[in-house]
Image 1 (tube, rainbow, N blue to C red):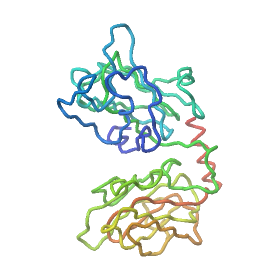
Image 2 (image 1 turned 45 degrees about the vertical axis):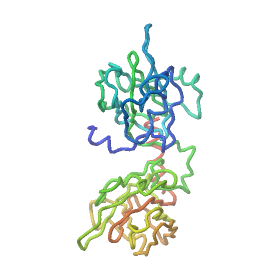
Image 3 (image 1 turned 180 degrees about the horizontal axis):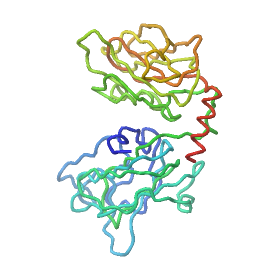
Length: 336
C-alpha cells in the first residue's frame, strides 16, 4: 500500500481515539505526550524555559553512554498498521539519526513492565531519519497490534508519531446484535464522497461527539443543481435499524435535508442501491435519531445531504447478519 493511500487511513495512535504514550525512558527536554498531539507541530523561536528552547515534541537528553531511547504508545484503535510517520519538524541539530518501530498485541490494559516483557515484532527496521521532515515508512505486517514502540538511535527529538492503519476491534468487546455498524472503531470506513473541501468525511465515523465544527465533515458551497454525498462501508453486512444524523455545531451551514440508501451488492452499480430513509428535513445543531423501517441486509450506506453543508457524526445502529458475523470474526482471527 502506497503512502498516498495509507495516509488517508485513521491514525490509530491519535489521542482523540484514546491513544496514549504509556512509557518513555527519558523526556528531559520535551514531554512524551507531545508525540500524539492531533495538531501539526509548531515552533516559536527564542522561547526558553529552564531546560532550554521549548520544543513541541518529545526530546531526550544527550547520551554520554551506549544505548537508545524508547517510547511506548498504546493505540487508541487497535488494528493493522499500514504505515508510520516519524515527524521531526523543527528538530534540526537535535533530531535522531535513525529510528526503529516495533509493535505488539497484548490483551487488556497492560502495565509498562508487562509491555516490556511482551513479544515485540519489528514493523519498521532501523531506518535513517532526516531532520525537520515528515519521514514516512510503509508497513507490511498483516496482523493486529495494540501497542507500538518507537526507538530512536541514540537520542534526540521527534515532534509527532502517526500510526495509520485499519482498525480491527476485539469481538469479545462488541455486541454483534446491537452495534454501530458504521463506527470507525468497529471497522466502518468512508470509501467515497463528493466533496471534502473543509474537512475529512472520515470524521463522521469517529468515536464520541464532535468537539467543534472542524471535527465533522463539511463541503464547499454548491453553485449548481446537485447535492453532496458520502458512501460508508459498514463493519460487515448488517441490518440498520436506527440512524443518527448529527448536525451539532453546524448552524448557518447545516444541510437542509438528507436521505439514506443501502447496497448489498456492488456499490458502483446504481441498480444495487435501495432507499433506507426518505428525504428528511434536518435542523441545525441537532442530533437527529431516526428509525429505519423494513431495512434489508446491506454492506454499504450512502448519505446524501441536500444541497450541501456539514455533518458532525453519522451513526448507523443495527445488527450484523449471520454472513456479516462470519466475515467480522474471520477478519479478527486472520489478523490477531
